[in-house]
Length: 428
Ligand code: COA
Ligand code: MG
Image (cartoon, rainbow, N blue to C red; front, side):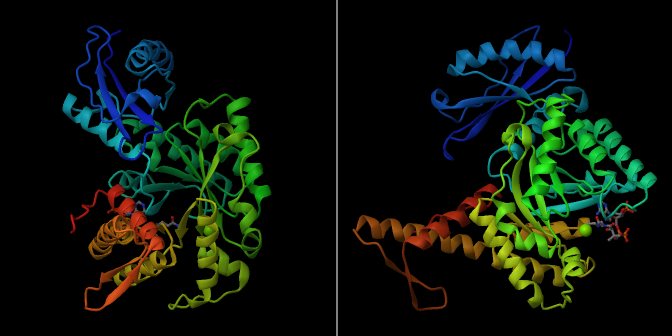
């Protein structure tokens, strides 16, 4: 076997402090361990192996080798998933570059991966697909729906264009946690081919489903996911669950929001998919309801707030509407800030130049991080002094009472800041 085997091991189930990954470079002909990186306590953790191979049989064979290493390490068993999703040595110019790519992939796949911007990339033109490789958007949504003309030949060629692209550009693709595909809705004649194609591409980890009006729609989608595992056997059921993003675009969906957000697949997340987010499609929603949009966004306040709160009730992400004024950065910024204040976790984008503004807004500002760090410190001191509340000096003078709910908020701010790699200041 002349291939060089590179393996990424990631431990799940660790506490946040322990949570981490290890990276092995292992050569079948000289099976020494070239590098290990451990930052976890291995004993108690479940092991998951993500490996990069070009061939599934080879993957199985080599996984068996690896399991024994894994067993020796921590008395645990492993599974192989995503064989095709990680960069292979052949895809990189040097071993160093390869290692860097693998670490980046592991970082992206860690719990806490941010979903601040969802950039739509129309599958109508090769140029746009190529451009998608240059964006740092947290999520890239390859679109088969509204950005593709409605004719059968256009839909068919968009579907084959994206499949060819994702299969041939394999080595330069972002990690699967960043790749999504928006399918045509489940009532269209395109849906069945779309979902089959998406499931055939192991790097597509997230499906964005437009025009979800009820839990029944999600059940229908899930049945198709299940069939691709069971009948078609085109995806490894041991891999990570397919994430489903439900796009809310109608009065009926709003009426059924609770049942949509609480939906769980009858076949379990592993084989039926897992709902991960509610997303608000404002233009379709206005078309459905007759709501007239204004630049104040006042007429959408109820709907947007309702979506956020319902998503949060069921532990889902909430993705705000597209800003269609794609050449006006100030307008975009104000819409992002508005969405962040309402509690949205991210926002859709339609142009690459929107991504940076979206991503820099949907993380805490320096001021917010400093305030969170001060609250945590003050509350720690208060608890040591046997008190449940304390006073916090305000920046512009004056005092503010802080107590338990503020700790929760501050912890959330610090958690997001850490996921985004932002520094947390030391405070007294
Ligand atoms: N994804 C990837 N690349 C994109 C892109 C996108 N969403 N939008 C623009 N680009 C590329 C263009 O191809 C162009 O590439 P080039 O520099 O290699 O020529 C570059 O970015 C600059 O584009 P620009 O000329 O500013 O935009 P445009 O006038 O060509 O297109 C839109 C404007 C709005 C039509 C286009 O951005 C678009 O189609 N966005 C997606 C729309 C969509 O997905 N709608 C459905 C979801 S709501
Ligand atoms: Mg639409």
